[in-house]
Image (cartoon, rainbow, N blue to C red; front, side, top):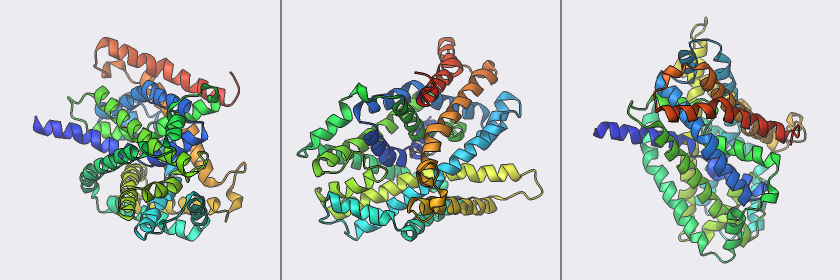
Length: 444
Ligand code: PFF
């Protein structure tokens, strides 16, 4: 009993450790800022509960029933090879995510080091923004820190210490959570901070456009790690008696709370200290150092916070890189040159170093030839994955379960199964198509 309890909590914490990451702390605040605040947040929460819940449950269930990772699972449950393309598509998505995710993880490491060196002391909003711009133009620094993040993640996989990291993150992630709560409480007492909370929580429905809806759906799926087949792996570790609905709901609520806390820290600071809510991807990084300057023991707290943000990022990169490594092993297994695990870690690291360097060079303006439609590679990879590939992955997994897995494999209550199937077969695929077409201005 004790054991099964601890493994149930273990799966939840491991899945939450992978899901809670830069999506909530870095991407959520600036996307909210760019999309007008309160109304966007309502859409984000609605997407997470209405579409997110069945989709997270679905991936967990695919894993739990097949006891396989994404690659084997699709074949095992449907009994055909026709779904193998989906694992290639998710691999493309994961590679693209890691091509900018490591860049931002590198920013976390850089900010941790600079916070420890007390660099931000006495800087105001203008100076902090200018400081990021200077760093953001420095390709060498960014490349070094991104490579540090890649090597660190690769070492965890190489030495097979994922379990140790998981155990460590069970202590450190709650610590991050407590810090976020304390900081959000601190912001409640900030003069001028209420404008930030109003921006966050007072919906202005006039700001909802088809594109805003697509952004909310994409962000929701990104923060919940949906559509990449990654949650399937965690489902595979679930004990038989674990309740999938409950675990999914707990994970989703945790992710929503962390995202909202990040927003409740960043936006009061934006309005009280004179930043712009539309600052863009650097929003979290320019505002947080200002927040810490007004807190107790700024050097220690800010260094600790950025260190914990690194942990949150690394637990996510580990889970994504792990699927790439497993994929390379499996995909080459029946070829003349099968890769073992260590070789696979090397190949994946090399690929990611190249893609991250390309993203950085394009971001800093050193490789404008890589820009597409006036956007650099970093922005394009970020948008392509969030607004296109992840929703597409979610669409495909819903169709897969709804139409191609024999229903006999699901044993739940009849009503619950009927509702769940209705969502996966019809509602979610249709909703995703409507959101897509709408945002392309084809209909609506
Ligand atoms: N959900 C993570 C975040 O919000 O940072 C990103 C992510 C991690 C996506 C792990 C997918 C994944 F497998």
